[in-house]
Image 1 (cartoon, rainbow, N blue to C red):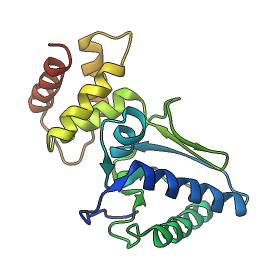
Image 2 (image 1 turned 180 degrees about the vertical axis):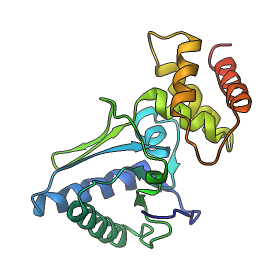
Image 3 (image 1 turned 90 degrees about the horizontal axis):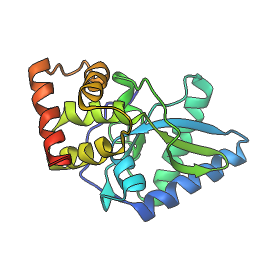
Image 4 (image 1 turned 180 degrees about the horizontal axis):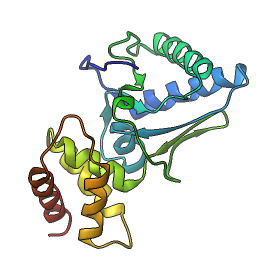
Length: 190
């Protein structure tokens, strides 16, 4: 697991698409197909197209140690070829989200190559992480977009899911989580 720390560098959708395609080609040469669940800025960048840049790709890496080792080696190779961060503290494609994990995987494909498929976590889980984080306006904007993707549930059902999927670290007291959720709801459905 990588303890992610920002380098301050941003990755455009064009560069990220190029890097992910190259990663897929390298996986093809290794005859290895991987499918992973993602969260964070890649969803905003590649699904919603609501950002121009992201800092990294946050994903749950394969549990199989050999597959994980291969993936990390290839990620570093692609990073080196494309001027992307490759040190262990700011890897451009990393599993820093594994410390809280992702419990779900949706059918929403963020990136597809015959040997590399990246899917989003379920909207409810992604919303929980954005509401929980609420670090800056980007988190709130992302949360609004994600909330609007959730269909067939009322406000209270969605909040129950947010509470269920909210990460444990760092702890956010339930009243504060509720307040943040209400703020996102108000912006989304004013």
